[in-house]
Length: 197
Picture 1 (cartoon, rainbow, N blue to C red):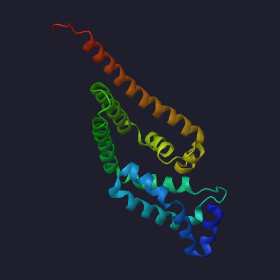
Picture 2 (picture 1 turned 120 degrees about the horizontal axis):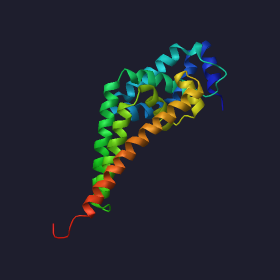
Picture 3 (picture 1 turned 90 degrees about the vertical axis):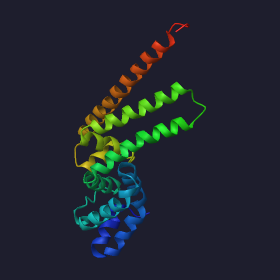
Picture 4 (picture 1 turned 90 degrees about the horizontal axis):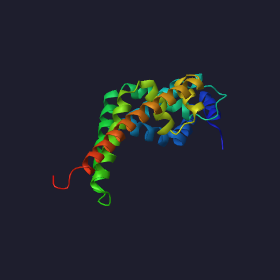
């Protein structure tokens, strides 16, 4: 199978060859854009990503065999133009977590409430996180890129990716832990009520 860098190199002489790159990676870019910005902008971001990639293909680093980090980096920058959509998506995720959790009748009510609170805490932490930390985390989790690939996508050193991912994880962990502690305290108060109350 031909590597991405070969396709890009051949597309410089024959632009139609670039279509091979689109066929290979459009679904990945679309899924990433959909997860971050929602259905309403996923098509636009995907199309714009490949347009920008096509226009800048002569600057692609041919030593990199896989174009996914490059493409997802372009998509991430385009998504920054759609911050409101991402914010709505994060709010929708919190609501979806509530609906999905409540729909599962096999869970106890308190478990459902705890799951909703945890999802809400995670979404809140993502929304408050600096965008570069959120980009690193979401490229890693949703874009399914390695640390090196996230570094390539964002044009930053891999050590910076590691530190930003650690900081993002710590932020999420603190937010979820605080919610869990609140839940445990609430359950403890509930369980210690007098029987005749």
